[in-house]
Length: 185
Image (tube, rainbow, N blue to C red; front, side, top):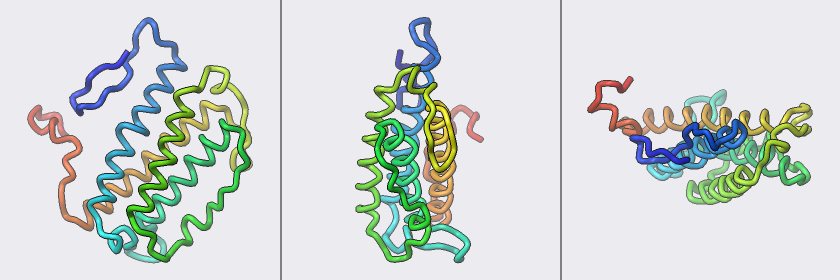
C-alpha cells in the first residue's frame, strides 16, 4: 500500500496485506529507483563533462568512474544474476577509465540499467530471495544480492552528492521540506 511521504515520493508502508518479502522488495525499489537514481541523475546533469571527470587525486574516483561502477554493479548483482545471464563485467575497467565519456551517455546507460533492475525487482518472489547465486565468487542469497545493490548504490550516490556540492558550492536541497519543521539535520 503506497503512502505519500513529505518528499513527494511514495514508499511502501507496512500493512496487513504486505508480506515481509514484498515489503522488502517494494522499499528496495523505492530507494533505488525513486530516491537515489533521480537525485544522482540531477547531480550529474548539473555538472559539465569536465566536472563529472574531475578527481582531486589519483587515489580518488571521479563521478564518471562512480557511474560506470554503479552500472556494472547493478548489472552484475541484479540483472545478470536474477536473469541467469552470463556475467561479463569488467570491474577494473570501471575505475581505470580516464577518457571523458559525456555525462549524457553515462546517464543514458545507467538509466537503462536502472529500468532493467526495476523490472527485475518488480517480479522477484520469496523463492528468488531465498535462492543461492554465485556473484563475484561469493555464494549469496537473492536477498543478499538485492540488499547489496541498494546499500552499495546508496554509498556511491552519497559520494556523488558530496562531490557535486564540493564542485558547485551549492546546497542541493534534497530535504528542503525539513527546514520548515526544524527536524533537518
